[in-house]
Amino acid sequence: MTTPSEAPDADETARAESTTQSSSPSHPARRRFLQSAAAAATIGATPHLRAQTQTPATAPAQSNPPVPPRPVSLNVNGRVYTLQLEPRVTLLDALREYAGLMGTKKGCDRGQCGACTVLVDGRRINSCLTLAVMHEGERITTVEGLASSTGALSPVQRAFIEHDAFQCGYCTPGQLCSATALLDEFRQGAASTVTNDVRARPPQLSDDEIRERMSGNICRCGAYANIVAAVRAAHGNA
Image (cartoon, rainbow, N blue to C red; front, side, top):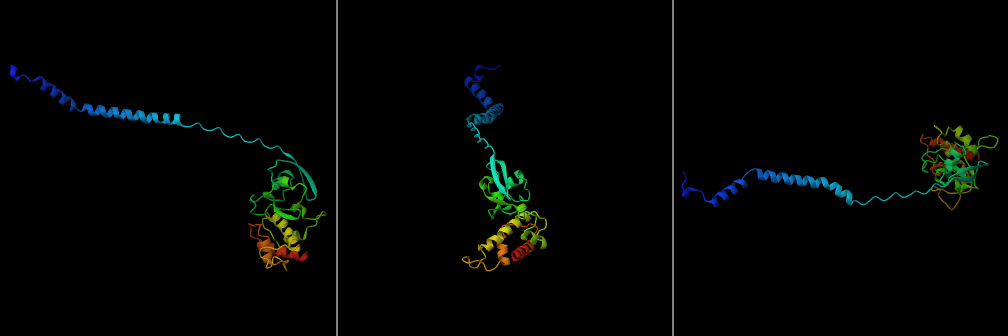
């Protein structure tokens, strides 16, 4: 039986219980659980907070209504075509898709290959780089209009056939139109970058002159030697 002197002091008992509770392993585990739960709740709420703080997207700008087609008169190969065209239609597309003149070819559609070359008032241009509405009242000549009204081939066309100046033929319409304008330019005394004296008429149409003046027309088949020979022959027969 315990005597009163052996009974534990109340303060000592309380300290012992406190020490036992603080050293119990359940308290750190509970604390870690609460910390993890709080972190998970914060992460889960972040997307909603971000969505609420984002600025609303601006409404897409309204596009302008399309411009309706209007009648455009083109004088092509001596015939007047009245076409219903939008202002943005190129001369190349007007010739092919609206006038039905498929001889003019669409190659790069960027003015780099020369397959779409036509003559406008005798001057060669890339028809893919100009708008059809810009050429009302001008004389447009395509490959279909190089031959005479009786069907006789022009000197340039005959020379291309005689010298086999084509292979696949896709670039040939542009080559023919460009060569036709080249001969007219030379007869009028126009110089090129290889002309020795640009102040005087070139004395002769040399092969270097032909290559330079035809450099805007690309032949992917590589028939350049025959093209030069054909232009030289057409110049001699002109």
